Length: 248
Ligand SMILES: NC(=O)c1ccc[n+]([C@@H]2O[C@H](COP(=O)([O-])OP(=O)(O)OC[C@H]3O[C@@H](n4cnc5c(N)ncnc54)[C@H](O)[C@@H]3O)[C@@H](O)[C@H]2O)c1
Image (tube, rainbow, N blue to C red; front, side):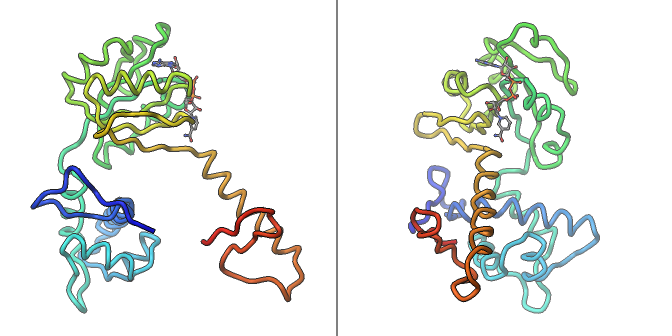
């Protein structure tokens, strides 16, 4: 499988990281912050790998991309590694984020205190429903979506979260891009078309549940098989599930 690598921001001082490594760095960062809070100055690769829930060989490889290999017998300096990962992830200053769609999910996200401690500040809330505009949530006033360009500019917002119904999400994405937003986290269950240079990440809890459902289905199918034909490990369920075998 070919690995995607970080692209346009790569430069002489910017490490060329596989996308999978980028996806694991926040896990390491979270684990490192917990270790620091618990008073650890150093951590072994095994200790950090266990805390982050990955295998230690993968972790060493990931961190070697940052040019840091730790010290044999001592491990990684927790504070230094936090600083280095935060540098690479661009978390050295808190980024302003806009949230569009202040319904059930939007309210919960707007009220979540955890973003602040992880490098983000919800700087503006938008909705198209006039009955929601003017509402105060967590110290912010919900603005009308028409105010987007002005507020994005004022607050230097480059990242936005979409929490509108799916039918409105593409239109909202278009307006965000027009206003200058270049990264979108989409909670709406739909695919967004955006121009080159705009990054979209999608969060869909239903998809995660469907994947877990597959594993539940697989476990019950395996339990039903006679012990002699049960194989642990790989999925290999092509016949029983009536589809292609999927490697885990
Ligand atoms: N990804 C997940 O795991 C997950 C979980 C729950 C909900 N969702 C999705 O999140 C979205 C929001 O869900 P919800 O339950 O909060 O819905 P909701 O109906 O309570 O809220 C949606 C809000 O979006 C606003 N809106 C609609 N069109 C808009 C537009 N053009 N511009 C600005 N605001 C607009 C509405 O006025 C409303 O306030 C849905 O797409 C839902 O499917 C995703």
